[in-house]
Image (tube, rainbow, N blue to C red; front, side, top):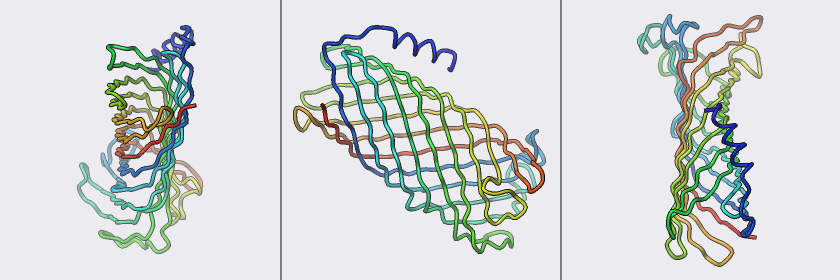
Length: 294
């Protein structure tokens, strides 16, 4: 995907645009998101001994989302820049360890509160509108985006095992970034626009943990993760003009990302690496967006 991304980017920017309709609009909105993040590792770099030795799962993580962006339109060509921040207010985590393959021989399991942390998303995209008919428009685009989940775990309790979780206040941060290709479909009826967008992203992944109760590990980075993967994003919206210069939209987003690679423990005096079998991120959100045209 990266090999076709750069030539496509150059081609789009080199083509001259129609300069007869230039506009700029500011976009801001708010909403709610629900997120699930999970990862598991093997006992060694070969993916064995056992094939899953440890697994963490953040689920039902809820966040209040705030979005700000800008859209520049020059004829049929457009440039979109968005940023979004989410404050986590609810969620739960499960941490399990195994000594046999295929999640057998579970010898440790904790359930933890995960109602703190934040989400961060930034995106830039450039594309062109093609009018298929008077009401239907197709919009291919290229871009780059970055996504972060900063997840806390605290107030833990042991379900299996006897570890002392008093003072638990640990974190896990996952970062997803890379180029993306997208396609948008817009249908206009009078003062309303129905839109559906799909994008595919080539992912460079990195993450880290700070396990505050592990004295045998370094801090603030107790473990690090690196890998590659892919992601998809689907966006559906209904936009209604409220004046000649502004509109309100109801927007739904769905994210599905995955990666694999290497997981490294940073011990007090050395490092030890194991196979990162997989790390997964899924989010769904709904928000209200206001757009003001200059």
